[in-house]
Image (cartoon, helix red, strand yellow):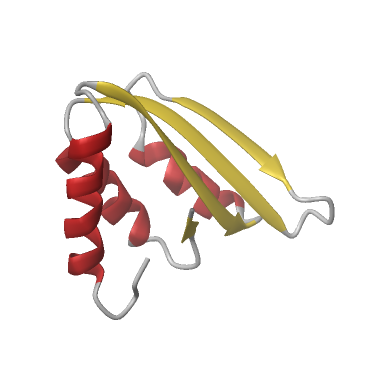
Length: 95
């Protein structure tokens, strides 16, 4: 993501999602975070009660955790909303 202009990034993402997906659709999020159970838990809670399939896996050294989330969403705006919520958690890298 362009850290200098996140709104421009989200604007481009919204256009790409509208052009490449039929809504509602299953969307796959991928995040990397230092292996901190609190931060991983915060990510999980953002997707609670949505029917999301969440897979977490620690790196070989155990220093980082990758979190993959597949969830059915109804619009590009729903996708962006979740990215923004996760973005409030410090140290999370969105892929």
